[in-house]
Image (cartoon, rainbow, N blue to C red; front, side, top):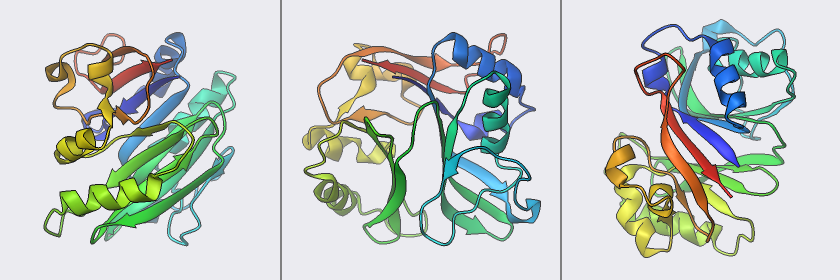
Length: 230
């Protein structure tokens, strides 16, 4: 599996050439794109045309027309691919909604979120062969790292599918104690190489073939991280 985790705040600094981005991803065999903190506007309304996707049954998550997932999904289709998208909302402040979005050139069986700690939650995507877990930690309450990690680990215990998580950095010491391993460690790269980017961890023994900063061809700024897992 090859995936790119996009840092949306870096992309927001300028206009995005979606065609060049998708061409670069496909040339490297990318099959999944993760946006851990994307934004959209309620006033943008619903998209007029969008392909296959799945939303959690929370009565809150709705994909808006200006969500970057809409542009990314349409561009993949222009290249002849059949992507599946998913969007799970995290916060709303006035007209701006934020959330977790993914594009997968495969299938997404289900998406849901689970409360962990007080005011925090984990967004869970069942991709068929694997499970992707993206915690969203409350910024308005005192951190409860030990309790949040324990609750999530207890909930995920017994999951027979391989799991990948994009946790907040402050979770790392507790996750290490519970057997989760950073992908850059498995790829035998120094953590400093990607230290300022959101860590990616896995809970099972596998080969991480490559982990590197990801950027658009010709750009000087990093826009995320690329990881290849066997």
